[in-house]
Image (tube, rainbow, N blue to C red):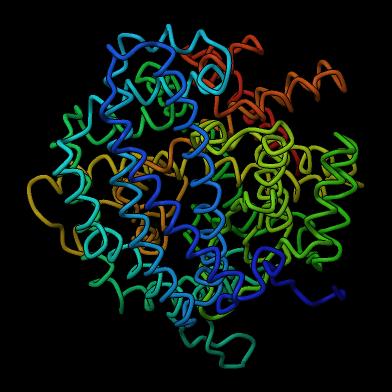
Length: 601
Protein backbone atom coordinates (compact mmCIF):
# COMPACT_ATOMS: atom_id res chain seq x y z
CA UNK A 1 0.00 0.00 0.00
CA UNK A 2 1.56 3.26 -1.10
CA UNK A 3 0.80 6.66 0.40
CA UNK A 4 -1.98 7.69 -2.00
CA UNK A 5 -3.44 4.42 -3.30
CA UNK A 6 -6.70 3.27 -1.72
CA UNK A 7 -6.88 -0.49 -1.17
CA UNK A 8 -9.28 -3.01 -2.69
CA UNK A 9 -10.05 -6.03 -0.58
CA UNK A 10 -8.73 -9.50 -1.29
CA UNK A 11 -10.86 -12.62 -0.80
CA UNK A 12 -8.61 -15.06 -2.66
CA UNK A 13 -7.82 -16.95 0.56
CA UNK A 14 -11.49 -17.96 0.70
CA UNK A 15 -11.68 -19.21 -2.89
CA UNK A 16 -9.16 -18.41 -5.66
CA UNK A 17 -11.82 -16.98 -8.00
CA UNK A 18 -15.54 -17.09 -8.77
CA UNK A 19 -14.83 -19.48 -11.61
CA UNK A 20 -12.35 -21.63 -9.69
CA UNK A 21 -12.70 -25.35 -9.08
CA UNK A 22 -12.59 -24.67 -5.32
CA UNK A 23 -15.57 -22.33 -5.48
CA UNK A 24 -17.53 -24.72 -7.71
CA UNK A 25 -16.78 -27.55 -5.29
CA UNK A 26 -18.02 -25.49 -2.35
CA UNK A 27 -21.18 -24.54 -4.24
CA UNK A 28 -21.83 -28.19 -5.13
CA UNK A 29 -21.18 -29.20 -1.52
CA UNK A 30 -23.69 -26.59 -0.30
CA UNK A 31 -26.39 -28.06 -2.55
CA UNK A 32 -25.62 -31.58 -1.37
CA UNK A 33 -25.66 -30.55 2.30
CA UNK A 34 -28.94 -28.78 1.80
CA UNK A 35 -30.45 -31.90 0.23
CA UNK A 36 -29.21 -34.04 3.13
CA UNK A 37 -30.56 -31.47 5.60
CA UNK A 38 -33.98 -31.63 3.94
CA UNK A 39 -34.10 -35.40 4.39
CA UNK A 40 -32.98 -35.02 8.01
CA UNK A 41 -35.70 -32.43 8.71
CA UNK A 42 -38.26 -34.83 7.26
CA UNK A 43 -37.19 -37.47 9.79
CA UNK A 44 -37.15 -34.83 12.51
CA UNK A 45 -40.77 -33.92 11.90
CA UNK A 46 -41.88 -37.42 12.93
CA UNK A 47 -40.85 -36.55 16.49
CA UNK A 48 -42.75 -34.29 18.92
CA UNK A 49 -42.92 -33.20 22.56
CA UNK A 50 -44.12 -36.68 23.58
CA UNK A 51 -41.01 -38.37 22.16
CA UNK A 52 -38.68 -39.77 24.89
CA UNK A 53 -36.28 -37.14 26.20
CA UNK A 54 -33.13 -39.07 25.31
CA UNK A 55 -34.22 -39.50 21.69
CA UNK A 56 -35.26 -35.84 21.38
CA UNK A 57 -31.97 -34.63 22.85
CA UNK A 58 -29.96 -36.73 20.43
CA UNK A 59 -31.90 -35.41 17.44
CA UNK A 60 -31.65 -31.81 18.66
CA UNK A 61 -27.89 -32.13 19.04
CA UNK A 62 -27.65 -33.50 15.52
CA UNK A 63 -29.91 -30.73 14.22
CA UNK A 64 -27.72 -28.03 15.74
CA UNK A 65 -24.53 -29.57 14.33
CA UNK A 66 -26.00 -29.86 10.84
CA UNK A 67 -27.62 -26.42 10.99
CA UNK A 68 -24.40 -24.70 12.05
CA UNK A 69 -22.31 -26.47 9.41
CA UNK A 70 -24.78 -25.51 6.69
CA UNK A 71 -24.87 -21.89 7.86
CA UNK A 72 -21.09 -21.67 8.06
CA UNK A 73 -20.67 -22.83 4.46
CA UNK A 74 -23.65 -20.86 3.13
CA UNK A 75 -22.68 -17.62 4.88
CA UNK A 76 -19.12 -17.93 3.61
CA UNK A 77 -20.24 -18.43 0.01
CA UNK A 78 -22.76 -15.60 0.26
CA UNK A 79 -20.21 -13.14 1.65
CA UNK A 80 -17.67 -14.21 -0.97
CA UNK A 81 -20.11 -13.48 -3.80
CA UNK A 82 -21.17 -10.23 -2.15
CA UNK A 83 -17.53 -9.13 -2.08
CA UNK A 84 -17.74 -8.93 -5.89
CA UNK A 85 -21.33 -7.73 -6.28
CA UNK A 86 -20.96 -4.84 -3.81
CA UNK A 87 -17.75 -3.52 -5.37
CA UNK A 88 -18.58 -4.08 -9.06
CA UNK A 89 -22.22 -4.24 -10.10
CA UNK A 90 -21.03 -4.59 -13.71
CA UNK A 91 -19.61 -8.04 -12.90
CA UNK A 92 -22.04 -10.30 -14.74
CA UNK A 93 -20.43 -13.49 -13.45
CA UNK A 94 -20.90 -12.37 -9.84
CA UNK A 95 -24.50 -11.35 -10.56
CA UNK A 96 -25.19 -14.77 -12.05
CA UNK A 97 -23.64 -16.53 -9.04
CA UNK A 98 -25.71 -14.32 -6.75
CA UNK A 99 -28.86 -15.35 -8.61
CA UNK A 100 -27.90 -19.03 -8.32
CA UNK A 101 -27.23 -18.60 -4.62
CA UNK A 102 -30.58 -16.88 -4.15
CA UNK A 103 -32.29 -20.02 -5.44
CA UNK A 104 -30.49 -22.07 -2.80
CA UNK A 105 -31.34 -19.48 -0.16
CA UNK A 106 -35.04 -19.87 -0.92
CA UNK A 107 -34.84 -23.62 -0.38
CA UNK A 108 -32.95 -23.06 2.85
CA UNK A 109 -35.49 -20.48 4.07
CA UNK A 110 -38.25 -23.01 3.48
CA UNK A 111 -36.39 -25.63 5.51
CA UNK A 112 -35.63 -23.04 8.19
CA UNK A 113 -39.35 -22.40 8.58
CA UNK A 114 -40.02 -26.11 9.01
CA UNK A 115 -37.30 -26.32 11.65
CA UNK A 116 -38.70 -23.29 13.49
CA UNK A 117 -42.19 -24.79 13.49
CA UNK A 118 -40.84 -28.09 14.83
CA UNK A 119 -38.86 -26.37 17.59
CA UNK A 120 -42.01 -24.39 18.45
CA UNK A 121 -43.83 -27.67 18.98
CA UNK A 122 -41.28 -28.63 21.63
CA UNK A 123 -42.11 -25.61 23.79
CA UNK A 124 -43.68 -27.70 26.63
CA UNK A 125 -40.47 -29.74 27.14
CA UNK A 126 -37.81 -27.28 25.97
CA UNK A 127 -36.75 -26.20 29.47
CA UNK A 128 -36.19 -29.83 30.42
CA UNK A 129 -34.18 -30.52 27.26
CA UNK A 130 -32.00 -27.43 27.72
CA UNK A 131 -31.07 -28.51 31.23
CA UNK A 132 -29.14 -31.48 29.82
CA UNK A 133 -25.45 -31.13 28.89
CA UNK A 134 -24.31 -30.75 25.28
CA UNK A 135 -25.10 -28.58 22.27
CA UNK A 136 -28.75 -28.20 23.31
CA UNK A 137 -27.82 -26.46 26.55
CA UNK A 138 -25.21 -24.34 24.75
CA UNK A 139 -27.90 -23.20 22.28
CA UNK A 140 -30.62 -22.67 24.89
CA UNK A 141 -31.20 -19.03 23.99
CA UNK A 142 -31.51 -19.80 20.27
CA UNK A 143 -33.96 -22.65 20.88
CA UNK A 144 -36.21 -20.72 23.26
CA UNK A 145 -36.18 -17.61 21.08
CA UNK A 146 -37.01 -19.70 18.01
CA UNK A 147 -39.88 -21.40 19.83
CA UNK A 148 -41.27 -17.99 20.84
CA UNK A 149 -41.01 -16.56 17.34
CA UNK A 150 -42.56 -19.64 15.73
CA UNK A 151 -46.04 -18.48 16.70
CA UNK A 152 -45.71 -15.75 14.04
CA UNK A 153 -45.15 -18.16 11.17
CA UNK A 154 -47.75 -18.68 8.47
CA UNK A 155 -48.67 -22.16 7.31
CA UNK A 156 -45.82 -24.10 5.74
CA UNK A 157 -47.36 -23.78 2.28
CA UNK A 158 -47.69 -20.01 2.70
CA UNK A 159 -44.13 -19.64 3.99
CA UNK A 160 -42.83 -21.71 1.07
CA UNK A 161 -44.74 -19.57 -1.41
CA UNK A 162 -43.54 -16.34 0.22
CA UNK A 163 -39.93 -17.51 -0.02
CA UNK A 164 -40.25 -18.46 -3.69
CA UNK A 165 -42.08 -15.26 -4.64
CA UNK A 166 -39.38 -13.26 -2.88
CA UNK A 167 -36.96 -14.09 -5.71
CA UNK A 168 -39.01 -12.25 -8.31
CA UNK A 169 -40.49 -9.77 -5.84
CA UNK A 170 -38.70 -8.30 -2.82
CA UNK A 171 -35.25 -9.61 -3.77
CA UNK A 172 -35.63 -8.27 -7.29
CA UNK A 173 -36.63 -4.83 -6.01
CA UNK A 174 -33.61 -4.83 -3.69
CA UNK A 175 -31.27 -5.74 -6.56
CA UNK A 176 -32.79 -3.02 -8.72
CA UNK A 177 -32.01 -0.40 -6.10
CA UNK A 178 -28.45 -1.64 -5.76
CA UNK A 179 -27.77 -1.69 -9.49
CA UNK A 180 -29.41 1.66 -10.23
CA UNK A 181 -27.68 3.55 -7.42
CA UNK A 182 -24.24 1.96 -7.91
CA UNK A 183 -24.14 2.54 -11.68
CA UNK A 184 -25.53 6.07 -11.72
CA UNK A 185 -22.97 8.62 -12.95
CA UNK A 186 -23.35 12.38 -13.16
CA UNK A 187 -21.50 15.29 -14.74
CA UNK A 188 -20.19 17.97 -12.43
CA UNK A 189 -17.80 20.88 -12.79
CA UNK A 190 -15.21 21.27 -10.04
CA UNK A 191 -12.42 23.85 -10.09
CA UNK A 192 -13.18 24.65 -13.73
CA UNK A 193 -12.86 20.99 -14.76
CA UNK A 194 -15.83 18.93 -15.91
CA UNK A 195 -15.94 15.43 -14.49
CA UNK A 196 -18.28 12.48 -14.69
CA UNK A 197 -18.41 10.91 -11.22
CA UNK A 198 -20.18 7.95 -9.59
CA UNK A 199 -22.72 8.86 -6.94
CA UNK A 200 -20.45 7.60 -4.16
CA UNK A 201 -17.90 10.28 -5.12
CA UNK A 202 -20.56 12.98 -5.46
CA UNK A 203 -22.01 12.12 -2.04
CA UNK A 204 -18.50 12.42 -0.61
CA UNK A 205 -18.47 16.06 -1.73
CA UNK A 206 -20.75 16.80 1.23
CA UNK A 207 -17.69 17.05 3.46
CA UNK A 208 -15.45 18.85 0.96
CA UNK A 209 -13.65 21.87 2.50
CA UNK A 210 -14.71 24.02 -0.48
CA UNK A 211 -18.21 25.49 -0.07
CA UNK A 212 -18.76 25.75 -3.82
CA UNK A 213 -17.89 22.07 -4.28
CA UNK A 214 -20.38 21.12 -1.56
CA UNK A 215 -23.15 23.19 -3.16
CA UNK A 216 -22.47 21.76 -6.61
CA UNK A 217 -22.42 18.27 -5.14
CA UNK A 218 -25.82 18.87 -3.54
CA UNK A 219 -27.26 20.18 -6.79
CA UNK A 220 -25.79 17.23 -8.70
CA UNK A 221 -27.35 14.81 -6.19
CA UNK A 222 -30.80 16.33 -6.63
CA UNK A 223 -30.50 16.30 -10.41
CA UNK A 224 -29.16 12.75 -10.57
CA UNK A 225 -31.68 11.20 -8.18
CA UNK A 226 -34.45 12.98 -10.09
CA UNK A 227 -33.64 10.86 -13.14
CA UNK A 228 -33.98 7.51 -11.33
CA UNK A 229 -36.60 8.29 -8.71
CA UNK A 230 -39.45 6.46 -10.49
CA UNK A 231 -37.84 2.99 -10.56
CA UNK A 232 -36.58 3.52 -7.01
CA UNK A 233 -40.05 4.59 -5.83
CA UNK A 234 -41.46 1.45 -7.45
CA UNK A 235 -38.83 -0.62 -5.63
CA UNK A 236 -39.59 1.02 -2.27
CA UNK A 237 -43.34 0.53 -2.74
CA UNK A 238 -42.75 -3.09 -3.63
CA UNK A 239 -40.58 -3.72 -0.58
CA UNK A 240 -42.83 -2.00 1.95
CA UNK A 241 -45.98 -3.48 0.41
CA UNK A 242 -44.51 -6.96 0.72
CA UNK A 243 -43.46 -6.33 4.32
CA UNK A 244 -46.95 -5.09 5.22
CA UNK A 245 -48.61 -8.13 3.68
CA UNK A 246 -46.30 -10.62 5.37
CA UNK A 247 -46.56 -8.86 8.74
CA UNK A 248 -50.34 -8.97 8.56
CA UNK A 249 -50.44 -12.62 7.50
CA UNK A 250 -48.02 -13.61 10.26
CA UNK A 251 -50.09 -11.93 12.95
CA UNK A 252 -47.80 -9.08 13.92
CA UNK A 253 -49.41 -6.10 15.60
CA UNK A 254 -47.71 -3.64 13.23
CA UNK A 255 -44.60 -3.17 11.11
CA UNK A 256 -42.56 -2.25 14.18
CA UNK A 257 -43.14 -5.47 16.12
CA UNK A 258 -40.92 -7.78 14.02
CA UNK A 259 -38.15 -5.15 14.17
CA UNK A 260 -38.37 -5.11 17.97
CA UNK A 261 -38.29 -8.90 18.14
CA UNK A 262 -35.37 -9.12 15.71
CA UNK A 263 -33.44 -6.55 17.75
CA UNK A 264 -34.28 -8.31 21.01
CA UNK A 265 -35.78 -5.27 22.72
CA UNK A 266 -39.32 -4.39 23.82
CA UNK A 267 -41.49 -1.34 23.19
CA UNK A 268 -40.75 -0.02 26.67
CA UNK A 269 -37.05 0.13 25.80
CA UNK A 270 -37.65 1.78 22.43
CA UNK A 271 -40.11 4.29 23.90
CA UNK A 272 -37.61 5.23 26.62
CA UNK A 273 -34.90 5.82 24.03
CA UNK A 274 -37.18 7.72 21.63
CA UNK A 275 -38.37 9.97 24.47
CA UNK A 276 -34.77 10.84 25.36
CA UNK A 277 -33.95 11.41 21.68
CA UNK A 278 -36.91 13.74 21.18
CA UNK A 279 -36.05 15.74 24.31
CA UNK A 280 -32.47 16.16 23.04
CA UNK A 281 -33.46 17.68 19.68
CA UNK A 282 -33.34 21.32 20.92
CA UNK A 283 -29.75 20.75 22.07
CA UNK A 284 -28.75 19.52 18.62
CA UNK A 285 -30.64 22.43 17.07
CA UNK A 286 -28.34 24.78 18.99
CA UNK A 287 -25.37 22.96 17.51
CA UNK A 288 -26.72 23.33 13.96
CA UNK A 289 -27.33 27.03 14.48
CA UNK A 290 -23.86 27.50 15.98
CA UNK A 291 -22.34 25.73 13.00
CA UNK A 292 -24.34 27.91 10.62
CA UNK A 293 -23.01 31.02 12.38
CA UNK A 294 -19.44 29.76 12.01
CA UNK A 295 -20.06 29.41 8.29
CA UNK A 296 -21.60 32.89 8.06
CA UNK A 297 -25.17 31.67 7.64
CA UNK A 298 -28.38 32.03 9.60
CA UNK A 299 -29.38 28.40 9.12
CA UNK A 300 -27.63 25.47 7.49
CA UNK A 301 -28.52 24.49 3.94
CA UNK A 302 -28.21 20.73 3.45
CA UNK A 303 -24.95 21.06 1.52
CA UNK A 304 -23.27 22.63 4.55
CA UNK A 305 -24.56 20.12 7.09
CA UNK A 306 -21.40 18.03 6.67
CA UNK A 307 -19.03 20.97 6.10
CA UNK A 308 -15.78 20.85 8.08
CA UNK A 309 -15.11 23.63 10.61
CA UNK A 310 -12.04 24.58 12.59
CA UNK A 311 -8.67 23.47 11.27
CA UNK A 312 -10.28 20.52 9.53
CA UNK A 313 -9.03 21.34 6.06
CA UNK A 314 -6.39 18.68 6.54
CA UNK A 315 -6.98 15.60 4.41
CA UNK A 316 -5.63 12.24 5.52
CA UNK A 317 -4.02 9.71 3.23
CA UNK A 318 -5.12 6.16 3.86
CA UNK A 319 -1.67 5.39 5.28
CA UNK A 320 -2.09 8.23 7.80
CA UNK A 321 -5.56 6.94 8.69
CA UNK A 322 -4.08 3.49 9.29
CA UNK A 323 -1.43 4.86 11.63
CA UNK A 324 -3.96 6.93 13.53
CA UNK A 325 -6.26 3.92 14.02
CA UNK A 326 -3.50 1.53 15.09
CA UNK A 327 -1.95 3.98 17.54
CA UNK A 328 -5.20 4.80 19.31
CA UNK A 329 -6.55 1.26 19.30
CA UNK A 330 -3.34 0.13 21.03
CA UNK A 331 -4.03 2.48 23.95
CA UNK A 332 -7.32 0.69 24.57
CA UNK A 333 -6.22 -2.88 23.92
CA UNK A 334 -3.21 -4.49 22.22
CA UNK A 335 -5.51 -7.22 20.96
CA UNK A 336 -7.71 -4.65 19.24
CA UNK A 337 -4.69 -3.00 17.62
CA UNK A 338 -3.26 -6.35 16.51
CA UNK A 339 -6.60 -7.24 14.97
CA UNK A 340 -6.72 -3.96 13.04
CA UNK A 341 -3.15 -4.49 11.82
CA UNK A 342 -4.16 -7.90 10.51
CA UNK A 343 -7.06 -6.28 8.64
CA UNK A 344 -4.79 -3.67 7.04
CA UNK A 345 -2.01 -6.09 6.16
CA UNK A 346 -4.30 -8.91 5.07
CA UNK A 347 -6.23 -6.99 2.42
CA UNK A 348 -9.48 -6.97 4.37
CA UNK A 349 -10.46 -3.40 3.43
CA UNK A 350 -11.94 -1.95 0.23
CA UNK A 351 -11.69 1.84 0.49
CA UNK A 352 -11.72 3.33 -3.02
CA UNK A 353 -14.93 5.02 -4.32
CA UNK A 354 -15.49 3.91 -7.93
CA UNK A 355 -18.15 3.33 -10.53
CA UNK A 356 -20.13 0.16 -9.86
CA UNK A 357 -19.32 0.13 -6.15
CA UNK A 358 -22.10 0.55 -3.62
CA UNK A 359 -22.14 3.59 -1.38
CA UNK A 360 -21.86 3.73 2.38
CA UNK A 361 -19.84 1.39 4.55
CA UNK A 362 -20.27 -2.05 6.08
CA UNK A 363 -18.41 -4.99 7.56
CA UNK A 364 -19.17 -8.61 6.69
CA UNK A 365 -17.86 -11.83 8.16
CA UNK A 366 -16.36 -14.80 6.32
CA UNK A 367 -16.88 -17.61 8.84
CA UNK A 368 -15.13 -20.21 6.69
CA UNK A 369 -11.81 -18.45 7.28
CA UNK A 370 -12.82 -16.73 10.56
CA UNK A 371 -12.18 -13.28 9.06
CA UNK A 372 -14.07 -10.10 8.17
CA UNK A 373 -14.05 -7.66 5.26
CA UNK A 374 -14.68 -3.90 5.46
CA UNK A 375 -16.19 -1.79 2.67
CA UNK A 376 -16.07 2.00 2.81
CA UNK A 377 -15.63 4.96 0.46
CA UNK A 378 -12.61 6.78 1.87
CA UNK A 379 -12.33 10.50 1.03
CA UNK A 380 -9.65 11.71 3.41
CA UNK A 381 -11.64 13.58 6.06
CA UNK A 382 -11.45 12.93 9.80
CA UNK A 383 -15.00 11.62 9.50
CA UNK A 384 -13.77 9.08 6.98
CA UNK A 385 -11.05 7.97 9.39
CA UNK A 386 -13.75 7.64 12.05
CA UNK A 387 -15.81 5.48 9.69
CA UNK A 388 -12.78 3.25 9.17
CA UNK A 389 -12.46 2.79 12.94
CA UNK A 390 -16.20 2.14 13.19
CA UNK A 391 -16.20 -0.67 10.62
CA UNK A 392 -13.05 -2.23 12.08
CA UNK A 393 -14.98 -2.30 15.36
CA UNK A 394 -17.53 -4.56 13.71
CA UNK A 395 -14.67 -6.76 12.56
CA UNK A 396 -13.28 -6.92 16.10
CA UNK A 397 -16.73 -7.93 17.32
CA UNK A 398 -16.61 -10.86 14.87
CA UNK A 399 -13.07 -11.62 16.06
CA UNK A 400 -14.23 -11.90 19.69
CA UNK A 401 -17.02 -14.31 18.74
CA UNK A 402 -14.73 -16.42 16.54
CA UNK A 403 -12.14 -16.51 19.33
CA UNK A 404 -14.78 -17.68 21.84
CA UNK A 405 -15.73 -20.52 19.49
CA UNK A 406 -19.30 -19.35 18.97
CA UNK A 407 -21.29 -21.30 16.41
CA UNK A 408 -23.13 -19.58 13.58
CA UNK A 409 -26.39 -19.77 15.51
CA UNK A 410 -24.69 -18.33 18.60
CA UNK A 411 -23.17 -15.48 16.59
CA UNK A 412 -26.53 -14.14 15.37
CA UNK A 413 -26.41 -10.64 16.86
CA UNK A 414 -29.22 -8.07 16.68
CA UNK A 415 -28.44 -4.65 15.27
CA UNK A 416 -28.96 -3.09 18.69
CA UNK A 417 -25.95 -4.95 20.07
CA UNK A 418 -24.06 -5.18 16.76
CA UNK A 419 -23.10 -1.50 17.03
CA UNK A 420 -21.48 -1.93 20.46
CA UNK A 421 -17.91 -2.48 19.28
CA UNK A 422 -18.11 -0.11 16.32
CA UNK A 423 -19.25 2.80 18.46
CA UNK A 424 -16.61 1.98 21.06
CA UNK A 425 -13.85 2.04 18.43
CA UNK A 426 -15.16 5.27 16.94
CA UNK A 427 -15.27 6.85 20.41
CA UNK A 428 -11.75 5.66 21.21
CA UNK A 429 -10.47 7.42 18.09
CA UNK A 430 -12.35 10.68 18.66
CA UNK A 431 -11.58 10.87 22.38
CA UNK A 432 -7.87 10.31 21.75
CA UNK A 433 -7.88 12.94 19.01
CA UNK A 434 -9.49 15.46 21.38
CA UNK A 435 -6.84 14.84 24.03
CA UNK A 436 -4.08 15.29 21.46
CA UNK A 437 -5.48 18.51 19.97
CA UNK A 438 -2.75 21.18 19.88
CA UNK A 439 -5.07 24.22 19.87
CA UNK A 440 -8.71 25.22 20.06
CA UNK A 441 -9.21 25.24 16.30
CA UNK A 442 -7.99 21.66 16.05
CA UNK A 443 -10.19 20.74 19.02
CA UNK A 444 -13.10 22.42 17.24
CA UNK A 445 -12.53 20.37 14.11
CA UNK A 446 -12.50 17.12 16.08
CA UNK A 447 -15.60 18.10 18.05
CA UNK A 448 -17.30 18.92 14.77
CA UNK A 449 -16.59 15.44 13.39
CA UNK A 450 -17.77 13.79 16.59
CA UNK A 451 -20.92 15.85 17.11
CA UNK A 452 -21.90 15.67 13.45
CA UNK A 453 -21.67 11.88 13.62
CA UNK A 454 -23.76 11.87 16.80
CA UNK A 455 -26.29 14.20 15.18
CA UNK A 456 -26.64 11.82 12.26
CA UNK A 457 -27.27 8.88 14.57
CA UNK A 458 -29.67 10.76 16.87
CA UNK A 459 -31.32 13.49 14.79
CA UNK A 460 -31.19 12.10 11.27
CA UNK A 461 -32.09 8.60 12.39
CA UNK A 462 -35.01 10.07 14.32
CA UNK A 463 -36.13 11.62 11.02
CA UNK A 464 -35.71 8.23 9.30
CA UNK A 465 -37.77 6.55 12.01
CA UNK A 466 -40.55 9.10 11.51
CA UNK A 467 -40.28 8.66 7.74
CA UNK A 468 -40.45 4.88 7.77
CA UNK A 469 -43.24 4.80 10.35
CA UNK A 470 -45.42 7.05 8.20
CA UNK A 471 -44.36 5.24 5.02
CA UNK A 472 -45.64 1.91 6.35
CA UNK A 473 -48.96 3.47 7.40
CA UNK A 474 -49.48 5.20 4.05
CA UNK A 475 -48.41 2.12 2.07
CA UNK A 476 -51.22 0.10 3.68
CA UNK A 477 -53.70 2.30 1.83
CA UNK A 478 -52.01 2.74 -1.55
CA UNK A 479 -48.73 3.04 -3.40
CA UNK A 480 -46.94 6.35 -2.95
CA UNK A 481 -45.65 8.45 -5.81
CA UNK A 482 -42.05 9.64 -5.85
CA UNK A 483 -43.33 13.12 -4.96
CA UNK A 484 -45.23 11.78 -1.95
CA UNK A 485 -42.19 9.84 -0.73
CA UNK A 486 -40.04 12.96 -1.07
CA UNK A 487 -42.65 14.95 0.84
CA UNK A 488 -42.60 12.38 3.67
CA UNK A 489 -38.82 12.62 3.83
CA UNK A 490 -38.78 16.42 3.91
CA UNK A 491 -41.50 16.60 6.58
CA UNK A 492 -39.59 14.11 8.72
CA UNK A 493 -36.40 16.15 8.36
CA UNK A 494 -38.23 19.32 9.38
CA UNK A 495 -39.58 17.66 12.54
CA UNK A 496 -36.21 16.22 13.54
CA UNK A 497 -33.87 19.08 12.62
CA UNK A 498 -36.26 21.84 13.63
CA UNK A 499 -34.97 25.32 12.84
CA UNK A 500 -31.39 24.11 12.65
CA UNK A 501 -31.58 23.58 8.89
CA UNK A 502 -32.71 25.90 6.14
CA UNK A 503 -36.02 24.35 5.10
CA UNK A 504 -35.55 25.59 1.54
CA UNK A 505 -32.60 23.26 1.06
CA UNK A 506 -33.26 19.85 2.58
CA UNK A 507 -32.56 16.42 1.05
CA UNK A 508 -35.80 14.90 -0.25
CA UNK A 509 -33.97 11.95 -1.86
CA UNK A 510 -32.37 10.41 1.22
CA UNK A 511 -34.63 7.40 0.64
CA UNK A 512 -33.15 6.62 -2.78
CA UNK A 513 -29.63 5.57 -1.89
CA UNK A 514 -29.95 4.19 1.65
CA UNK A 515 -30.04 0.41 1.06
CA UNK A 516 -31.56 -0.20 4.51
CA UNK A 517 -35.01 0.79 3.27
CA UNK A 518 -34.94 -1.92 0.61
CA UNK A 519 -34.81 -5.07 2.75
CA UNK A 520 -38.14 -6.77 3.42
CA UNK A 521 -36.91 -8.52 6.54
CA UNK A 522 -35.01 -5.55 7.96
CA UNK A 523 -37.61 -2.84 8.39
CA UNK A 524 -36.73 -0.01 10.78
CA UNK A 525 -33.03 -0.61 10.27
CA UNK A 526 -32.45 2.87 11.69
CA UNK A 527 -33.12 2.99 15.45
CA UNK A 528 -30.67 0.17 16.32
CA UNK A 529 -27.86 2.55 15.34
CA UNK A 530 -29.02 5.03 17.95
CA UNK A 531 -29.26 2.23 20.50
CA UNK A 532 -25.69 1.28 19.61
CA UNK A 533 -24.39 4.85 19.86
CA UNK A 534 -25.93 5.58 23.24
CA UNK A 535 -25.23 2.11 24.66
CA UNK A 536 -21.64 2.31 23.42
CA UNK A 537 -21.28 5.82 24.85
CA UNK A 538 -22.51 4.55 28.21
CA UNK A 539 -20.03 1.66 28.09
CA UNK A 540 -17.19 4.05 27.25
CA UNK A 541 -18.07 6.13 30.29
CA UNK A 542 -17.74 2.96 32.39
CA UNK A 543 -14.37 2.24 30.74
CA UNK A 544 -13.14 5.73 31.65
CA UNK A 545 -13.92 4.99 35.29
CA UNK A 546 -12.58 1.44 35.43
CA UNK A 547 -9.69 1.53 32.96
CA UNK A 548 -7.90 -1.59 31.75
CA UNK A 549 -9.86 -3.97 33.99
CA UNK A 550 -12.97 -3.14 31.94
CA UNK A 551 -11.53 -4.53 28.68
CA UNK A 552 -11.69 -8.32 29.34
CA UNK A 553 -15.28 -8.03 30.58
CA UNK A 554 -16.15 -5.93 27.55
CA UNK A 555 -14.68 -8.52 25.18
CA UNK A 556 -16.73 -11.22 26.93
CA UNK A 557 -19.80 -9.10 26.25
CA UNK A 558 -18.90 -8.90 22.55
CA UNK A 559 -18.47 -12.66 22.44
CA UNK A 560 -21.93 -13.12 23.99
CA UNK A 561 -24.15 -10.72 22.02
CA UNK A 562 -25.86 -13.65 20.29
CA UNK A 563 -26.71 -15.34 23.57
CA UNK A 564 -29.22 -13.01 25.20
CA UNK A 565 -31.61 -10.09 24.94
CA UNK A 566 -30.27 -6.56 25.02
CA UNK A 567 -31.68 -5.77 28.47
CA UNK A 568 -30.07 -8.88 29.98
CA UNK A 569 -26.67 -8.21 28.43
CA UNK A 570 -26.75 -4.54 29.45
CA UNK A 571 -27.59 -5.49 33.03
CA UNK A 572 -24.12 -7.06 33.32
CA UNK A 573 -22.80 -3.49 33.54
CA UNK A 574 -25.61 -2.18 35.72
CA UNK A 575 -27.37 -0.55 32.75
CA UNK A 576 -31.19 -0.39 32.64
CA UNK A 577 -32.14 0.15 28.98
CA UNK A 578 -35.82 0.52 29.91
CA UNK A 579 -35.03 3.65 31.86
CA UNK A 580 -35.15 7.01 30.09
CA UNK A 581 -32.51 8.17 32.57
CA UNK A 582 -29.87 5.88 31.06
CA UNK A 583 -30.45 7.25 27.55
CA UNK A 584 -30.50 10.82 28.87
CA UNK A 585 -27.20 10.14 30.61
CA UNK A 586 -25.52 9.08 27.37
CA UNK A 587 -27.05 12.04 25.53
CA UNK A 588 -25.76 14.26 28.32
CA UNK A 589 -22.20 13.26 27.41
CA UNK A 590 -22.87 14.41 23.85
CA UNK A 591 -24.47 17.62 25.14
CA UNK A 592 -21.31 18.47 27.08
CA UNK A 593 -19.36 18.19 23.83
CA UNK A 594 -21.87 20.50 22.16
CA UNK A 595 -21.49 23.00 25.01
CA UNK A 596 -17.72 22.95 24.52
CA UNK A 597 -18.17 23.34 20.76
CA UNK A 598 -20.28 26.44 21.28
CA UNK A 599 -17.84 27.89 23.81
CA UNK A 600 -14.89 27.86 21.41
CA UNK A 601 -14.67 31.21 19.60
